[in-house]
Length: 158
Ligand SMILES: CC(C)(COP(=O)(O)OP(=O)(O)OC[C@H]1O[C@@H](n2cnc3c(N)ncnc32)[C@H](O)[C@@H]1OP(=O)(O)O)[C@@H](O)C(=O)NCCC(=O)NCCS
Image (cartoon, rainbow, N blue to C red; front, side):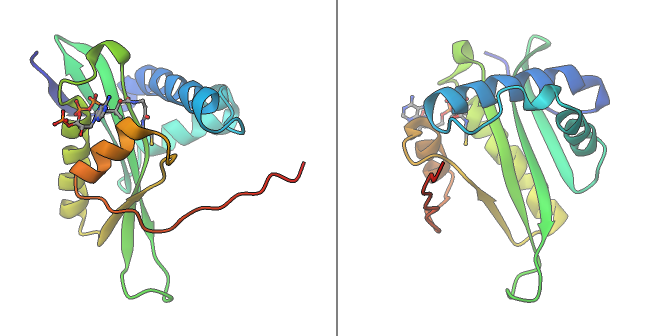
């Protein structure tokens, strides 16, 4: 399978919206029922996608095969205040590969593209949140050299 990784532009808005919807449905159904499956169709959701596609401090890479978009990754650079001794980090907000294309190295290629972009941007570290039971993703991240750091604890009170 010939996979090409391309930096997304405004022309990829619909693909990014669709991938993010699929990811949010998957996460809401499997891991976190508080995720809004329709976020990308809200005004704030559309503004968010516009912003990440048109801002130097964020990036979307899309994986394509024979011209067809089959996965994406989205990351944003965050400045870090004086509390820490590092200055900035990129946070991977979304990663998705279409079901029929998984297991072909596309997730790894997308992760590599963010690492290369982040190094070029001079950021100090890359972070991401993932549900602890999302074994496919956790295994991929560990393979890419990520380690488990903080533990988010939640108590639902309503
Ligand atoms: C996680 C995801 C992006 C992986 O994409 P992918 O293209 O299948 O990943 P790759 O083929 O590049 O696999 C890379 C590594 O990930 C791990 N991995 C991927 N799928 C796995 C599976 N089903 N079981 C165990 N490990 C898996 C393996 O370590 C694999 O390396 P290997 O093939 O040498 O064993 C994909 O499963 C996906 O889109 N999942 C749903 C969305 C999601 O959970 N996103 C992350 C939210 S934080």
